[in-house]
Length: 238
Image (spheres, rainbow, N blue to C red):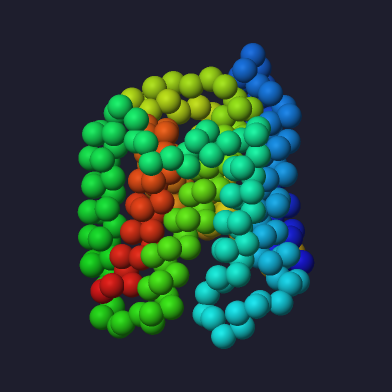
């Protein structure tokens, strides 16, 4: 129940920020796509948490939420296959576009930063093979396909305006995905109390914006997925 309430709060915050944006960007706003984005977030969180922890874990011996991640990936892929979305429009392409050089520089800088942070915080304790396998695959595949894939498309369609930021077309919809990414990692609800960890919000929201930049610069999820998995997996090696 706590996870359901947390998800409803999170989705309500997204709706509130979107409606605020709609008041500012009236001419390009399309409310049907906003509704689609809100429904997508609710469905995604339900899959990720196995029905808000009501569905038994099919892998009870696992230390990580493989079932929820795999279900969320499957659900996102189904949405991408729908005509209103489409694989390429959601970033499921290996084509990096004509401006891939700048994106590759950003990718290299991010990868270097993540490895440096991992080395700086190294505890010398080896991680299990399951942890290594999970952190080098699931976070990037699951979260990038959703936040920088289907959700980004829906919110970009809700807010059509764009500005170029270092060669990447960024709109209010993209900003919302980055804010939501930070919120979903930082927001918690327990025993009637809501908490938002500002440090966690900053440590996830800012990288989310950089991953958004990679996605919009290249039109592809390839570099964001790899960078995300490096961010999660680098610390498992040291």
